[in-house]
Each structure stands twice: as structure tokens, then as C-alpha cells.
Image 1: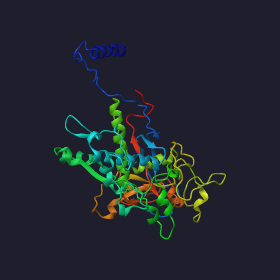
Image 2: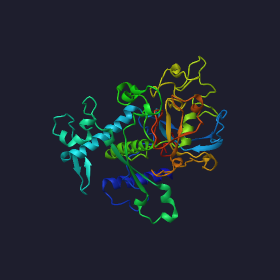
Image 3: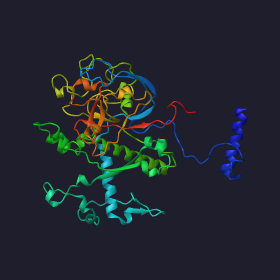
Image 4: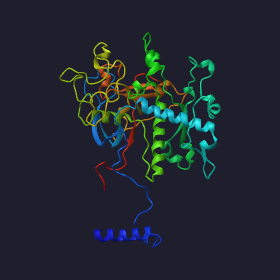
Length: 423
């Protein structure tokens, strides 16, 4: 019977696509004009983390006695995760895109395309001539520092001018029954942020400490291209995720492919589940219980002992692929830089969040109390002691703060049952 049904369906589809018959001849065969989708899709630079269940909470003594991470069985849906922290050079692609898009808008003319509905878009085929004597120079003058603000007369782009507007949808608000008849625009939020990293955080974070070379070179010099980007706020990290989604989906649309879901920061428990790498009750991504291997070599970039920073091979950050990855193929889930998550920080949140994809968020406004601006960071950093490297350790930073020891990586929800399910 199944074979006969397949033959019938194939016959109707062939007839429909060839134009021999109109419609579906009265049969239920599904819409025929669907975009392409590859269930085995693996985004570049990401690894697949399968669905599973784990027990969150301390795998060792809670030396701070904070009791803000109680043991709880959690189930997590599968997702993709960046195998490394977002690097300086990857973030620079975002900065250059924003810079070029602003330049195209300022130049106008052939640099813009007009759609049938009158909307304008950027003509990325048009080159931008950044040279001082070019025809574009006059239109771009306001992007640079004024002459009084130039160091040694160098004409640098003013990073404060590099702003990106991103949008997000308030799904939970829209799901409330009392909001069913409200217009969609009620739940669409937009925010414009300056996206250039705060390079001065290297000086601001440490009083009476010489870190000026890092301010001058860390983000701009090619020596640090493969090091994790730092000095980005939680909002800047979210703006990057929004841009990354737009960049890839625009390209997929041109190729007739179905869009992917949204890139975003990981939810706190997604991060912990990925950091554990499928291991049970292990305090570190590599297992444990020690921070050194059997040869006495340190397994992450942190502050060992009483402050022997260079002992692990890195005085500050190290390359994003330094040290061995965990069993999921993820690098530096402990140490190097702590990482932003999507989750709002509340000390007792484990007591009331759901055990299935737990998620607690709050979109703090600029005038909200500072307590409501706390966002969970995970993993510990190059300047932290070993306790913060544990997979269960929770910490936080204010969402509008920039730190020389906080970066991020993205996740992308997996659409379907599992990567091995092709049916």
C-alpha cells in the first residue's frame, strides 16, 4: 500500500510540475514550492551539540558558599555552537560591514539600489574609494576624527560613528492572551548601538597596571587576529548575532535556500551543558578533578597559584584554539575569556526555572536599577582563579559594561529531531 501511495504522489507531482495538470488533482500531497533545506547542515566554524539531559550544579565544593547553582536535572535541545570564542578578526568583519554600509549610504547615487516599492538598499557591487583625493572623500569626511582629534595627523575613522541598529521580537509578550489583538509592531524592539570594541577597558580594568600596549594593539594588530574579542557589551554581542543572522540568511535567500533560525548568545544552561562535553559530574570541561594533566601541564589559561600568569603560556589571552577542546570539540570553555550568555542573573533562578530548556531573560532599560542589568557570564578568564573555570560556576557582569576578560560565542538552534535523523 505504501508503495502504491508513493507512486501516486510522484505521478501527481510530476504532472503538476510539468504543467500538464493544474493544482494537485484533488490530492493531499503538500505544497510543491518549498525552499531547499539540508538537515545535515553544519555552519562554518560551529560544532553540533546533541540533545540530552544533565545534572547542573556544583561538581565540587562551592568554596564561595554562594549556593546560587543548586543541583537540578535539565534537558537541553540540540544546537550548534561556535567551536571557539568569537575572534578579533571575525568581529572585525562585522565592524567593516557596518563601516562600509554607512559609507555607501553617505555617498548615495549608484551606491544605493531602489526597489519596486521605493525602499532603498545598498549596492554592494560598487567599490568605495577611501583615498584622500577620491571623489568619495568629501562625502565621507564626517566619518573621520576632526583635525584637532587626530594623533600624529593620522586620519582615522571615528569608531563612535560606527552604529548598527538591530531588532528582536518579544515572543513571550506576544504569547499572552491579552495581547492577541495587538499589532505586531507592539512586540518589535529596535536598538542602535556603537559596535566598535572598547579598547580602553585594558587600562580601566586594572589600577596602577601598565596595559597600554594592549589598548593600542589588541583589536587592531594582526598579531591578535585569532585571539578572542573583548571589550564588547552584552548589547554589542547581541547586535553581532543579529548581523550574523541577516548576513547568512540574505545569502541563503539568493540561492533559493530556506533560512536558518537566529544566531544568538547561549542560554546559561546550554552553555554549561556544552562545556561539560557529555561528561557526568565533571568539574571542568576536560573532566577533572585537577587543573593539570599527568605531566603537570596546565589545561587552561587562567591565574594559577598566587598569580603566576605566564605559567600556562599566556600572560593575557591566548589564541582561541589554544589547549585541547572538550569532547564536543569546543575550545576554551574554561579560561581565556569569560563569556556572555543570554540569561539574566538572579541568585535563586534555579529554584523556579523549567527543567526543559530553562530560560530566564529580562530586557533591561537604560534607566532600570543596576541589579536588573546583570547578565550571567560563564567559564572564567585569563585573570581568574581556578574556581571560576568550573563548568557549574555562575558569575555576572552588567550588560552595559565592557571588560578585557569577557567575550562571547554564538549558538544556532538545530531544526529537527537530531542531526542523524534524515527522515
